[in-house]
Amino acid sequence: MSSPSSTKPDISTAAPLTGDGGDTAPVGKAKLPPVVWLLGAVAFIMGTSEFIVSGLLPQISGALDVSVSSAGALITAFAVGMMIGAPVMSVATRRLPRRSALVAALLVFAAGHVVGALSSNLGLALAGRFAAALGNGTFWAVGAVVATAAAGPAASTRAMGVMVGGITLANIVGVPLGTAAGQLSGWQAPFWMLAALAVVAAAVIARRIPADTTRADTSLRAEATALRHPRLWLVYLAIALIQAGLMAAYSYVAPLLTDRAHLATALVPLALLGYGVGALAGTTIGGRLGDRQPYATLIPATALTAAFLGAITLWATNSVVAVLLVVLLGTAGFANNPVVVGEVVRIAGAGRSLPMALATSAFQVGIAMGSWLGGVALTSSLGLQGPSLTGFVFALAALLPLGLLAASHHKAA
Image (cartoon, rainbow, N blue to C red):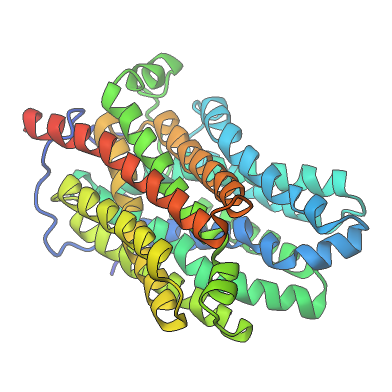
């Protein structure tokens, strides 16, 4: 595989993808450009940061002298930073060359972690997490455009599969290792490590990603015009509903496994590892199939997600059955992610960072909505069946916008 510097795909002048979501050429066995794998590695760093706080809440709350629930505001701050910051930073950086925007995003991300590591109070820690989320959101808004443009129309979903796979791998490897480091060396240790990795990644991107100098399609009017497609907003709705379905159940998977399925507490990490492996498999499958048959991939995957959530609601009373269903849920649910992001690229056109930023916001809206309503259901009379039942309803609801998208896709084709 050639190096990124020798490949130098012209990411700034890539031909726009069809706005009607028409069929693309077969992907074949063409290799993805090295730049896509580089951005996937950066996505691993970003994913580790997003989820690392969950494993370190007891240590952080003790160090900052606040309750665990108050320390949980660090998770909310990151989600809000991603939700609001991604589109705002996309507009703010639209006149920057994409390489410069990526480097700036990583430096802001690193600075947020330095502020977090030096924090002696919750307010400063929240500011650090918000800054890190701004960097993360900017990276996804710009990085997804760079990756899909470099891969080309026929492999845009595969490229997004690599980037989403970086987040999935972060859950399997990065978060457990970071949590262990925080427990052994203090909660600041993974923050310092992530800041250092981000600086190194910024240096590599500055060297290995070619500069783009053509700025013809980066006006705010052009970005806003791309948002006028009604199908784009159906994709955003589908993203939010699918994520809400997954997170309603996954946010409370530990009590489900221990209290309802009677799994030993010591085995819960292994069950979560299985979920992560399933998610990585689903991301890979979705990335490979979604370019050629996006809705023939999305609709069955979402239907399977709903089916597994329904099965968890009814039958997850045995530890073996519950773990198996959780693994399958990860596989089906994450098969959707690269495909829906690929559809944003197809509908909005290549090179549009604002539509991609709003896709990031849609993911965060789904995560926040699902985890909140799943918690409400958990405290209701439904008890431990409540979160998965809530997720089941969300996943079923996602089939409506996906069905409308599939119908318009076939009509256009």
